[in-house]
Length: 454
Ligand SMILES: Cc1ncc(COP(=O)(O)O)c(C=O)c1O
Image 1 (cartoon, rainbow, N blue to C red):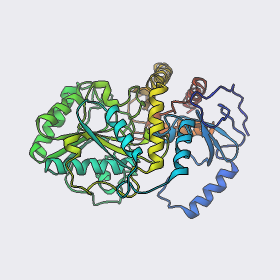
Image 2: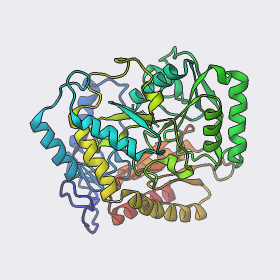
Image 3: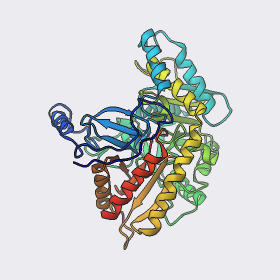
Image 4: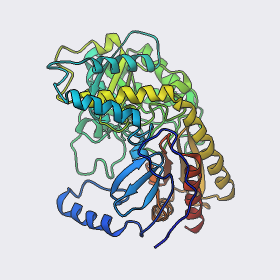
């Protein structure tokens, strides 16, 4: 049994008043978590994986507390969801008030105003000052599917281009857009028709190819293999998430946007992981000043409640026939109440600035580690979305085994850490924006020690 003493600090954004400390009172996972994991094996589909089988009973600020009483540092935010923190008081209050009023009517049966207010807020926050419309859904994948439907309807064309290393979800259409076979696609085909792939800009692995040149390479392939006259949409994550936090070289995204606009192709930015202050701007598209035709959002939108959205040019969004877009739960009133409180917090708490501060801490320390350790091949990302790519120091080849060892050691020391990357060799840092600096730094120190020992 390891007991770790760390100074406590306050939680900037509230949440349950949990001590902001890493505290291990059992080995990880502890006996109660292990018992629950055994029950899971008997009750839950084996296809539903778990990164770290510690079963959570409370969370807030920068910690998750498990059923055994361990308090773990959260460097994952439930995959970039709890930007405002877990159970942020503003969100809890808004959802509780809505809960007491009504839980569901189905917006497409008997509507309510919070759905409209979420749409108005998204129309205001997303890039571009043109007329916009929004539609609300439940998951990122569902919103991606709807963006594709809307783009096809508007253009009267069918083909859709996604990129190498892309991740857009695990439903039948989005699996086809997602690049990586294992574990997302293997055995689940056939995939939807008219989905194509183009080469990405991946500066660390393409020799630092200029962004405009990389875009022209992709465009040339699209023109040769598909033809703009058949292409409804290009969909891209402005910073790729699951693919390895790949930040395309400057000029890549604007060149693609310009080509799409000139060729009546809808440009869809999938900001499911990058959206809502995560990257140190409200959206990652803002960094290069691109204005997507459609933007897909989820994750950070509603403080942990399931909600997703497509926002875009009014003429595109208004194209589908009445009843063609929607669903039973999309824009559920509880999720809308949460989203309004969450989006207000991003603005009132200036979480864009907080993400930049977190990014400065992460990149400063990770770059120092990189200078001293050649196995850290690359440090990249923006704001509170930063990753390291681990490689064989001699060959520069991706080192997934090393990555696995580092992450396992960090987990054992009470730090929740996620991996990603086509080659399984990327560690990603996605802390809640409510994490105190001290806890973030302690988490990084644990990772540094794990790397040194691996
Ligand atoms: C960029 C991106 N698009 C789409 C999705 C799918 O979202 P969901 O898991 O909510 O369906 C994800 C999820 O990680 C994502 O990162």
